[in-house]
Length: 245
Ligand SMILES: [Zn+2]
Image 1 (cartoon, rainbow, N blue to C red):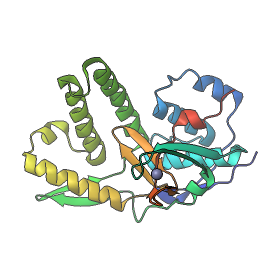
Image 2 (cartoon, helix red, strand yellow):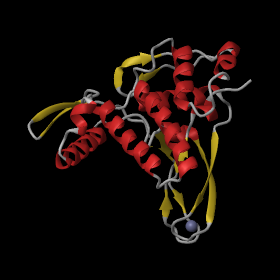
Image 3 (cartoon, rainbow, N blue to C red):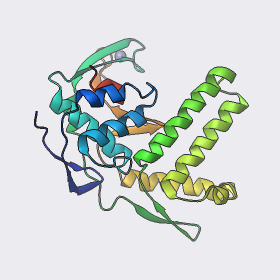
């Protein structure tokens, strides 16, 4: 099967070609633990593109997975079920994953933003594949701490805080010692400046990054009772995409 090439969302000048996954790829993928979604994504995308996809942005990687899936699989309808915030009932609907591809947008300008916070110059970059792999491991640790000690335990709160700091480190390259030495006011200013720069660099598909997990946004669904519209977070993880034997 010939998969059309695509342009990398974070670097539209780069044209990416993909081949179809082989049986050997799928056998090797089965060795990766089920909750290591990002590790599986790296393995899969490295195999089908021949590139080093840890260097791609997290958004590039999700886009590439969806691109692969939509062009290789015959069936790409996706079902979502959600508890409606407007009427309190549970609704479900189907949409075509192809429609999500239409929300694609390339990055505006370069894949970084130079900002200045209280006189200090900082370069903000999108999360890379390597960063989301590291954050995914922390997420697994956080889930374990929550399961063992409860979501409000000291252990869970510490893990969550450390994860937020590490996310900031991945986005800015600021040294951890320096970051923890900042007065709280500076940190808050930094966090909001980084969020603003990150929004400016939005690329790929409409998605949300939340504590080590990436979600796509579904097309709008209209509540049959109230006619209010909802967009659902879609867990669009590698295991749902990557072909199985
Ligand atoms: Zn409803």
